[in-house]
Length: 270
Image (tube, rainbow, N blue to C red; front, side):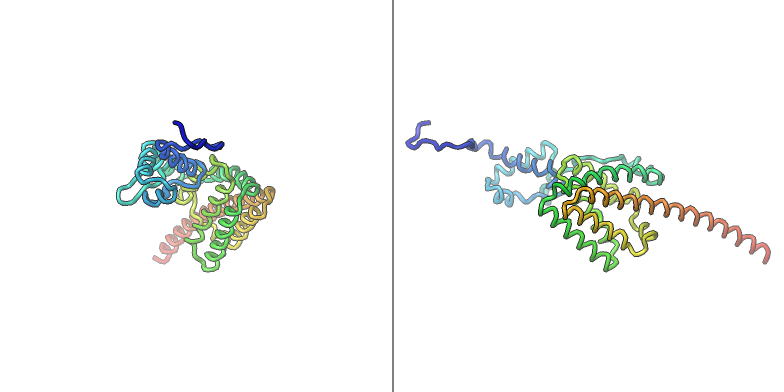
C-alpha cells in the first residue's frame, strides 16, 4: 500500500491484528514453561489481563480459549482461569498407598531428592537473580519466626517453600516441573510426617540451622557450599528417619513384653 511517508527502518515486524491473541498466548505459555505460573495458579481476570497486556478483551478471551483448548489452563465458571495440572501424578493412588505402608520406599525417595536437590542447589547458587535471593531470604525469616513461635504448621510450609524456591532459582525448567510433583507428595505426607524429626532433633533448631546454611549459601553465590548443604540436610533427614523407625520398632516389642508381664502378674495375684 502506497504511503506519503516512507516506513522507518526497524528490526521489528508490525503486529497484525489477527496475531494479537497469539502474542498473549505466547506470553502465558512462556510463563508456564519457565515455572513462573505453576499448576493451580489463578490468572488475572479477563479485564485485568486486557489492561496489563494492553490488548482488547475479545482478544484476551480468544487467547484464553486457545490455552484452554490446548490443556494449559482450566476455566471455572464464576471463579476464573487457572493453570492446569500439567505434570500429572508422579504415582497412582494405589502406588501412593503402597509406599505409605512400606517405609523402605522412603529411602528411595530421599535418594532421588538428594541427587536432584544437590544439583538444583548448585545451579541456584550460580544462577539465582536478586529476586530469587530476596524470596529465599524472606522464607528464611518465616522459618525463624515459626521456630521461635513453635508453629509446626508454619514451619512445615516454610520448609517446602524454601526447597521449591531453590529449585525455581536453578532456572532449569525440567527440574522445576518434576520437583513440583515430588514436593506435592511430601505436602500430602505420603513419605513422612516432618513431626518425626522433632522426636530426633528435639527443638527443631538443627533443622533451622541447616536450612539457613542452605539458603545463605545460595544467596552468597557459593555452588560447592550449596551442594554440600543440600546433601548434609537430606542425609540428616534420612538418618533421623532410620533412628525413628528403630525407636518405633523397639517400642512395639517393649509394649508386647509389658502386656505379657501384666498377664503374668494378674495370674499370680489371682
